[in-house]
Image (cartoon, rainbow, N blue to C red; front, side, top):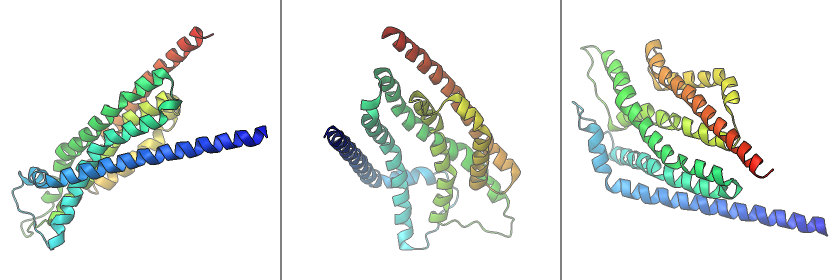
Length: 251
Protein backbone atom coordinates (compact mmCIF):
# COMPACT_ATOMS: atom_id res chain seq x y z
CA UNK A 1 0.00 0.00 0.00
CA UNK A 2 2.78 2.40 0.96
CA UNK A 3 4.58 1.68 -2.30
CA UNK A 4 1.46 2.38 -4.36
CA UNK A 5 0.89 5.65 -2.54
CA UNK A 6 4.49 6.70 -3.17
CA UNK A 7 4.14 5.86 -6.85
CA UNK A 8 0.93 7.92 -7.06
CA UNK A 9 2.65 10.92 -5.45
CA UNK A 10 5.55 10.66 -7.90
CA UNK A 11 3.09 10.41 -10.78
CA UNK A 12 1.16 13.47 -9.55
CA UNK A 13 4.40 15.42 -9.13
CA UNK A 14 5.44 14.51 -12.67
CA UNK A 15 2.06 15.57 -14.06
CA UNK A 16 2.30 18.82 -12.11
CA UNK A 17 5.77 19.54 -13.50
CA UNK A 18 4.62 18.79 -17.04
CA UNK A 19 1.61 21.07 -16.63
CA UNK A 20 3.80 23.87 -15.35
CA UNK A 21 6.29 23.33 -18.18
CA UNK A 22 3.41 23.50 -20.66
CA UNK A 23 2.23 26.77 -19.11
CA UNK A 24 5.75 28.26 -19.31
CA UNK A 25 6.04 27.27 -22.97
CA UNK A 26 2.63 28.77 -23.77
CA UNK A 27 3.53 32.06 -22.06
CA UNK A 28 6.81 32.21 -23.99
CA UNK A 29 5.01 31.41 -27.25
CA UNK A 30 2.38 34.10 -26.65
CA UNK A 31 5.13 36.62 -25.87
CA UNK A 32 6.84 35.74 -29.17
CA UNK A 33 3.58 36.22 -31.09
CA UNK A 34 2.97 39.63 -29.45
CA UNK A 35 6.54 40.77 -30.14
CA UNK A 36 6.36 39.44 -33.70
CA UNK A 37 3.17 41.38 -34.45
CA UNK A 38 4.64 44.51 -32.86
CA UNK A 39 7.88 44.15 -34.84
CA UNK A 40 5.94 43.55 -38.06
CA UNK A 41 4.05 46.81 -37.53
CA UNK A 42 7.38 48.64 -37.48
CA UNK A 43 9.17 46.34 -39.93
CA UNK A 44 9.50 49.06 -42.55
CA UNK A 45 11.62 51.09 -40.13
CA UNK A 46 13.75 48.03 -39.41
CA UNK A 47 14.20 47.43 -43.15
CA UNK A 48 15.11 51.08 -43.76
CA UNK A 49 17.80 50.86 -41.08
CA UNK A 50 19.53 47.99 -42.86
CA UNK A 51 19.40 49.48 -46.35
CA UNK A 52 19.94 53.19 -45.63
CA UNK A 53 23.71 53.06 -46.23
CA UNK A 54 23.63 50.87 -49.34
CA UNK A 55 24.87 52.54 -52.52
CA UNK A 56 22.77 50.22 -54.67
CA UNK A 57 19.13 49.15 -54.80
CA UNK A 58 18.01 45.64 -53.99
CA UNK A 59 16.05 43.77 -56.64
CA UNK A 60 12.75 42.00 -56.06
CA UNK A 61 12.04 38.97 -58.26
CA UNK A 62 8.60 38.04 -56.95
CA UNK A 63 5.72 39.77 -55.13
CA UNK A 64 6.14 37.50 -52.09
CA UNK A 65 9.88 38.06 -51.73
CA UNK A 66 9.62 41.33 -49.83
CA UNK A 67 6.92 39.88 -47.57
CA UNK A 68 9.13 36.90 -46.72
CA UNK A 69 12.03 39.20 -45.84
CA UNK A 70 9.73 41.33 -43.68
CA UNK A 71 8.66 38.17 -41.85
CA UNK A 72 12.31 37.25 -41.27
CA UNK A 73 13.19 40.70 -39.94
CA UNK A 74 10.17 40.70 -37.62
CA UNK A 75 11.04 37.17 -36.53
CA UNK A 76 14.61 38.06 -35.55
CA UNK A 77 13.38 41.11 -33.63
CA UNK A 78 10.74 38.98 -31.89
CA UNK A 79 13.31 36.33 -30.93
CA UNK A 80 15.57 38.98 -29.39
CA UNK A 81 12.70 40.46 -27.38
CA UNK A 82 11.42 37.04 -26.31
CA UNK A 83 14.76 35.93 -24.84
CA UNK A 84 14.20 37.69 -21.46
CA UNK A 85 10.69 36.22 -21.27
CA UNK A 86 11.98 32.75 -22.06
CA UNK A 87 14.78 33.08 -19.49
CA UNK A 88 12.32 34.35 -16.87
CA UNK A 89 9.92 31.46 -17.48
CA UNK A 90 12.79 28.98 -17.35
CA UNK A 91 13.96 30.48 -14.07
CA UNK A 92 10.45 30.25 -12.58
CA UNK A 93 10.28 26.60 -13.65
CA UNK A 94 13.55 25.59 -11.98
CA UNK A 95 13.23 28.01 -9.04
CA UNK A 96 11.69 25.47 -6.60
CA UNK A 97 14.73 23.24 -6.97
CA UNK A 98 17.28 26.00 -6.35
CA UNK A 99 18.82 27.11 -3.08
CA UNK A 100 18.16 30.74 -2.00
CA UNK A 101 21.66 31.85 -3.05
CA UNK A 102 21.34 30.03 -6.40
CA UNK A 103 18.02 31.78 -7.10
CA UNK A 104 19.60 35.19 -6.68
CA UNK A 105 22.62 34.37 -8.80
CA UNK A 106 20.75 32.72 -11.68
CA UNK A 107 18.16 35.53 -11.77
CA UNK A 108 20.93 38.01 -12.62
CA UNK A 109 21.68 36.09 -15.84
CA UNK A 110 18.36 37.02 -17.45
CA UNK A 111 19.26 40.56 -18.60
CA UNK A 112 22.73 39.32 -19.59
CA UNK A 113 21.18 36.86 -22.06
CA UNK A 114 19.37 39.68 -23.86
CA UNK A 115 22.37 42.03 -23.82
CA UNK A 116 24.75 39.39 -25.18
CA UNK A 117 22.30 38.37 -27.92
CA UNK A 118 22.12 41.98 -29.10
CA UNK A 119 25.91 42.31 -28.74
CA UNK A 120 26.36 39.24 -30.94
CA UNK A 121 24.04 40.67 -33.58
CA UNK A 122 25.94 43.96 -33.54
CA UNK A 123 29.32 42.22 -33.71
CA UNK A 124 28.23 40.16 -36.70
CA UNK A 125 26.59 43.07 -38.52
CA UNK A 126 29.03 45.91 -37.86
CA UNK A 127 32.34 43.98 -37.84
CA UNK A 128 32.11 40.63 -39.61
CA UNK A 129 29.49 41.38 -42.27
CA UNK A 130 31.22 44.48 -43.79
CA UNK A 131 34.57 42.68 -43.97
CA UNK A 132 33.17 39.56 -45.63
CA UNK A 133 30.80 41.50 -47.91
CA UNK A 134 33.52 43.82 -49.20
CA UNK A 135 35.85 40.88 -49.71
CA UNK A 136 33.28 39.11 -51.86
CA UNK A 137 32.55 42.27 -53.85
CA UNK A 138 36.27 42.66 -54.55
CA UNK A 139 36.24 39.32 -56.36
CA UNK A 140 34.01 40.77 -59.07
CA UNK A 141 35.88 42.44 -61.95
CA UNK A 142 34.80 45.28 -64.21
CA UNK A 143 33.05 42.87 -66.55
CA UNK A 144 30.55 41.92 -63.84
CA UNK A 145 27.58 43.87 -62.56
CA UNK A 146 26.56 43.41 -58.95
CA UNK A 147 22.86 42.67 -58.69
CA UNK A 148 21.46 41.57 -55.35
CA UNK A 149 17.93 40.41 -54.70
CA UNK A 150 16.40 41.44 -51.39
CA UNK A 151 16.03 37.78 -50.33
CA UNK A 152 19.63 36.83 -51.11
CA UNK A 153 21.05 39.96 -49.51
CA UNK A 154 19.18 39.60 -46.22
CA UNK A 155 19.79 35.86 -46.24
CA UNK A 156 23.50 36.70 -46.29
CA UNK A 157 23.06 39.29 -43.52
CA UNK A 158 21.30 36.75 -41.30
CA UNK A 159 24.03 34.19 -42.01
CA UNK A 160 26.66 36.69 -40.86
CA UNK A 161 24.84 37.81 -37.71
CA UNK A 162 22.62 35.14 -36.16
CA UNK A 163 25.41 32.60 -35.46
CA UNK A 164 27.29 35.25 -33.47
CA UNK A 165 24.16 36.25 -31.57
CA UNK A 166 23.77 32.62 -30.48
CA UNK A 167 27.47 32.08 -29.73
CA UNK A 168 27.64 35.26 -27.65
CA UNK A 169 25.21 33.60 -25.24
CA UNK A 170 27.93 31.08 -24.38
CA UNK A 171 29.40 32.92 -21.33
CA UNK A 172 26.02 33.28 -19.61
CA UNK A 173 25.02 29.70 -20.38
CA UNK A 174 28.34 28.46 -19.01
CA UNK A 175 27.98 30.56 -15.86
CA UNK A 176 24.39 29.38 -15.40
CA UNK A 177 25.28 25.69 -15.78
CA UNK A 178 28.29 26.15 -13.49
CA UNK A 179 26.13 27.73 -10.78
CA UNK A 180 23.82 24.69 -11.00
CA UNK A 181 26.76 22.30 -10.72
CA UNK A 182 26.16 20.74 -14.15
CA UNK A 183 29.58 21.75 -15.52
CA UNK A 184 32.79 23.11 -14.05
CA UNK A 185 36.00 24.78 -15.36
CA UNK A 186 37.88 21.47 -15.46
CA UNK A 187 35.33 19.92 -17.80
CA UNK A 188 35.43 22.99 -20.04
CA UNK A 189 39.22 22.79 -20.16
CA UNK A 190 39.11 19.14 -21.19
CA UNK A 191 36.58 19.97 -23.92
CA UNK A 192 38.70 22.82 -25.28
CA UNK A 193 40.03 20.99 -28.34
CA UNK A 194 36.54 19.80 -29.29
CA UNK A 195 35.14 23.30 -28.74
CA UNK A 196 37.82 24.79 -30.99
CA UNK A 197 36.94 22.25 -33.67
CA UNK A 198 33.28 23.27 -33.51
CA UNK A 199 34.23 26.95 -33.63
CA UNK A 200 36.45 26.27 -36.66
CA UNK A 201 33.51 24.61 -38.41
CA UNK A 202 31.26 27.58 -37.56
CA UNK A 203 33.90 30.02 -38.84
CA UNK A 204 34.22 28.08 -42.10
CA UNK A 205 30.43 27.98 -42.49
CA UNK A 206 29.84 31.73 -42.15
CA UNK A 207 32.86 33.06 -44.07
CA UNK A 208 34.19 32.89 -47.63
CA UNK A 209 36.44 29.90 -48.42
CA UNK A 210 39.71 31.65 -47.62
CA UNK A 211 41.98 31.03 -44.65
CA UNK A 212 42.34 34.67 -43.59
CA UNK A 213 38.61 35.31 -43.23
CA UNK A 214 38.12 32.14 -41.23
CA UNK A 215 40.96 33.03 -38.86
CA UNK A 216 39.61 36.56 -38.35
CA UNK A 217 36.21 35.14 -37.39
CA UNK A 218 37.55 32.25 -35.32
CA UNK A 219 39.85 34.34 -33.10
CA UNK A 220 37.04 36.26 -31.31
CA UNK A 221 35.06 33.03 -30.94
CA UNK A 222 38.01 31.32 -29.26
CA UNK A 223 38.47 34.35 -27.02
CA UNK A 224 34.78 34.07 -26.13
CA UNK A 225 35.25 30.41 -25.16
CA UNK A 226 38.31 31.17 -23.04
CA UNK A 227 36.43 34.03 -21.37
CA UNK A 228 33.62 31.58 -20.61
CA UNK A 229 36.11 29.28 -18.87
CA UNK A 230 37.44 32.14 -16.76
CA UNK A 231 33.91 33.22 -15.81
CA UNK A 232 33.11 29.62 -14.96
CA UNK A 233 36.10 29.57 -12.60
CA UNK A 234 34.82 32.67 -10.81
CA UNK A 235 31.32 31.24 -10.43
CA UNK A 236 32.70 27.86 -9.37
CA UNK A 237 34.89 29.36 -6.64
CA UNK A 238 31.99 31.43 -5.31
CA UNK A 239 29.74 28.38 -5.40
CA UNK A 240 32.23 26.29 -3.41
CA UNK A 241 32.71 29.09 -0.88
CA UNK A 242 28.96 29.53 -0.35
CA UNK A 243 28.43 25.78 -0.03
CA UNK A 244 31.21 25.62 2.56
CA UNK A 245 29.70 28.50 4.53
CA UNK A 246 26.26 26.89 4.31
CA UNK A 247 27.64 23.56 5.55
CA UNK A 248 29.46 25.22 8.45
CA UNK A 249 26.35 27.16 9.44
CA UNK A 250 24.10 24.10 9.63
CA UNK A 251 26.70 21.56 10.85
